[in-house]
Amino acid sequence: MQRRALPGEINGDAFDRFTVGHAAVGVIMGLARAPWWAAIGVAIGWELIENPLKDRFPRVFPHATHDRFVNAATDAAAMVAGWAAIRALPNR
Image (cartoon, rainbow, N blue to C red; front, side, top):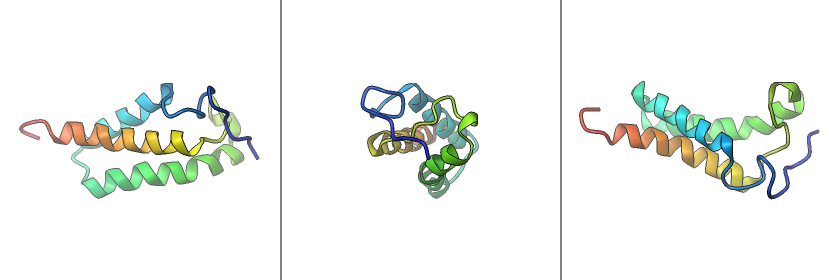
């Protein structure tokens, strides 16, 4: 089992460099015209399976420490915000 990230580490604070990646996935989902429930489902679903995947396949992740709740919540919110930003554009 991987250890939980500490404050100040990747996965330990609200925002880290991977938060941008989560937002980008939301943008892609918005461009693909995914419905709101899919964006929310993917955002929350990923955060629920991410730590177990880090335990099972740590070499796949550049930082295999477990996300603290604040990081997981921010990453999920960033994904939904990316989706919402695209969907809010005119002619979308």
